[in-house]
Image (cartoon, rainbow, N blue to C red; front, side, top):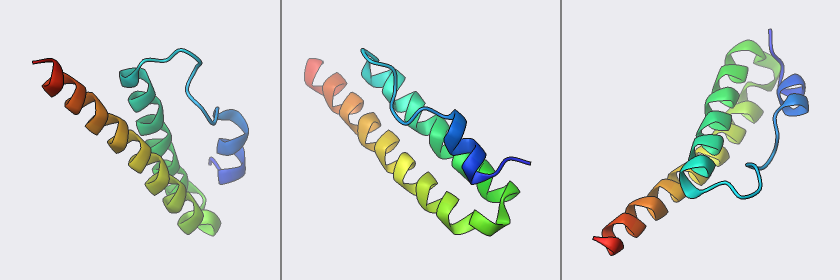
Length: 75
């Protein structure tokens, strides 16, 4: 069982320095997925984990939008 406290203790908060946009998107998407899994295994912190998942998903989606815009602008 993974708890929210355990997940926060072992997961970096920020992508590695120098990560490109795709690496950043993957990082935040991975954190969103991780928090969704934590919500399943830590029922006492379900809503907090889901809120964290939502925030991380927003970051991943924003970066994905930036990637799409930059590809469109370069075409």
